[in-house]
Length: 119
Image (tube, rainbow, N blue to C red; front, side):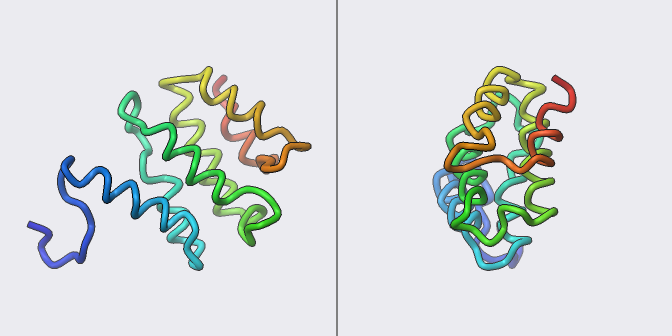
């Protein structure tokens, strides 16, 4: 059971509702809630949902979000990418290339530095 913790998903059957919740959290007013969405797949390795990873990160990039330059968000983005790079370095390199400084949704310098740290 959920032991009174609210509506969090508690089985793989709840993966689609967990995904929907993380997409919602990635655009929350609260920075820490956004950060949870970015970091929710740490150490998932091959089970990482790369589309979800892309969407929660991109929700926090660009001029439209107040958090694109926030340290705890840019650090989390770099951490999530660096962690996934252990499993799929090409995906991470392509993502970083796609989000170059002149793109519509550029990665912060810190995010890029963290993402590429071990590549």
